[in-house]
Length: 159
Image (cartoon, rainbow, N blue to C red; front, side, top):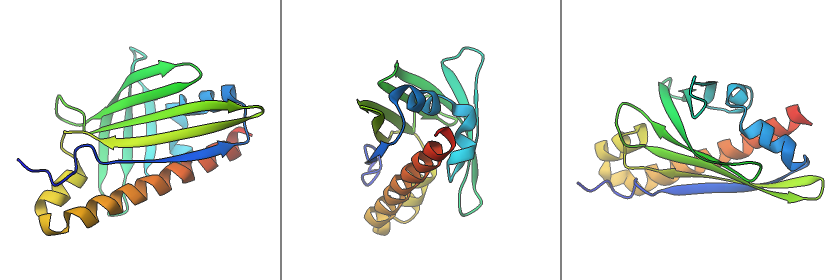
C-alpha cells in the first residue's frame, strides 16, 4: 500500500543552548518534565523498567494520544532517542537528540522520523491523498517549530 511518503518523512533542528552538556542531558532525559516545555506533549512518565516511558499529547484540533516510548539509544551525555508506539507492534515515529559540547554551551541536534505504524498524519494523508505532500510538509514544519519551542523553554528553566 502506498503511504504517499509518510514513512521516513524526517525533520529536525539544531540549536546552540547556553548550557553545559550535562545540564542539557539532564533535561532531555527528564521525560516527566516535557509537559513544562512542549507545545504538544503534556505528560511524560518513566515506566518501571526504566527503558520505556509513557507520553500524552494534545493537538490543536483537540485530539489526544497516549503512547508508549521505547528508548533505543542512551549514550550519556551524547545521544538519547526513542521509538513511539501506539496500538501496533511497529513504531510510528522515532525521536532523537544528539549533543555536542561547545565549551560552556551545547549544540543540540534533534530530529523526528516517521515510522511505518499508524498515526494521525498517516490517516490524514490516506484520507486526502491529493494533498499528501502539503499535509506531510505542514506536519514536519510544525514538528520542527515545536522542537525549537521546547528547547528554548528547556533552556530557560534549566539555566
